Amino acid sequence: MKHQGHFMTPDEIEKLPYRPCVGIMLTNPRGHVFVGQRIDRDQDAWQMPQGGVDPGEKTRDAALRELQEEIGVTEKLVSIEGESTGLVRYDLPHDLVPRIWKGRYRGQEQKWYLMRFHGSDDQINLETQHPEFSTWKWMPRDQVIDAIVPFKRAVYEQVLAEFAGKY
Image (cartoon, rainbow, N blue to C red):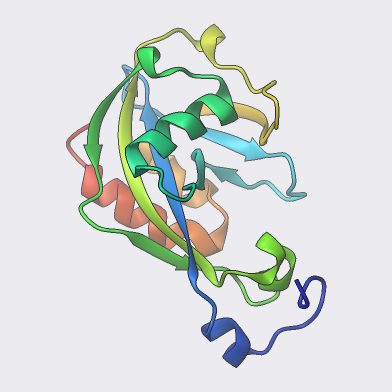
């Protein structure tokens, strides 16, 4: 808490842990990928659904919970087609560390799930209890990397490569 809104040195940041997290690559029958525009960003920043894993929670359960919390999609509307073999890490830009998660984490360590959406677009609802996205769209996978906020691009490249041929 002491660092909130303050500068942190690279050495201080390096000592911080990664936040346990899940990411969801949701695809429609055409193989396009769900991306949402974050509410709390002023620039054009698209991302796939993601969120923290609660203590004692299984990553698969966390992924399904986040999908419902962020975009209103329930477990019965999706099938899990794959999961990342390992954890994918990314570091936040240093200037963001003190401002996000109260300066407790240097970045995120994510387990990714590939899910197929079997519902209709009108079953996607951004007006959830804690809205994360202002708008969303299905994006062809070859456009995803360019649309993502730069510090997450390496993660998305890794995830798209690992799930290639499965969606």
